[in-house]
Image 1: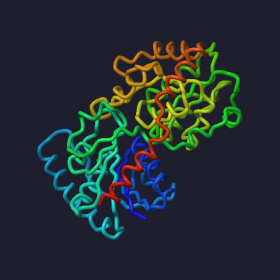
Image 2: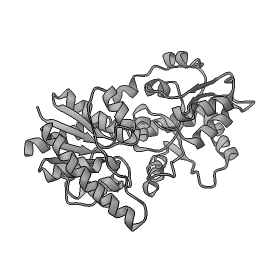
Image 3: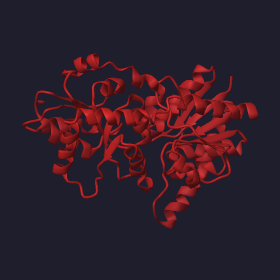
Image 4: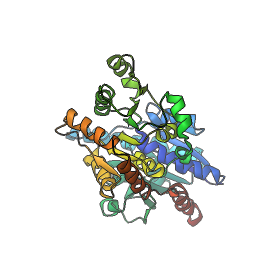
Length: 362
């Protein structure tokens, strides 16, 4: 049995692929721990999933200002030093960083201790933490081939895709419709803004829910922090509309839908491919180097998705796009097949094979 650490987080797009790899490593009999920020999503989700959790405290990288960068560098050094003790105490063999600023101290601490170090990059454009950690890693795992030339360092780079929890495949449309109070025979559009919710997607979902001649159902996962405001604005939900704050059984949400309106984080795109769902992607503009739009354009290029960007947002045009897609069942089915053609259902197994090999090679 080897001991592995998953490190990183901040968003579901980092955490859930990490846990998919971790689950596979646990299935093989290894011990797996999670190092991350106790106040962000990993601090809640990893313990809920049965992982021993170790808190890491570090500063986010400042976007400007010399003084801020000096403070960051000093804070990073302190965080690396503070993380060395837990890595020793846990007898860790390999640290796998999955992105987010909190992943850097554990990966760099592993390197200073001559333990195995690896990173998984979920997006087309690598994040700052992974760009730094890749320089000292023994292994780099990629979701997209286009990332290969963008990530530094001389470590072997392997294309594995984005690991997903295959539980998303277990949904049943009839059971899902009954749970949400919807008709399984009618076209259903799922609006979801990711683990944190998304204001623009909520705006679009509300506009669609209020359409007087709406010929499709609306399943709206608005996010916990937006639920009170969205619920107040919607009032009593019209027929064929279901409002949910947060869904930890996305298998039901996917099974009950025909079109998904969502962000374009890599984890979400991996799930869309796995379940074979058509999508209307609204990339978040608040990400490093606009990487979500690059992710989205790749899925659109194979006919699996359409893309709406927030720059110059026109709510009427956005609603019209949803209506046009929802009314064309044949198109939705074609887009779903195109999405499924991009699925890599063995990504977690392939990633676990490669990370395991670092222990064997060492």
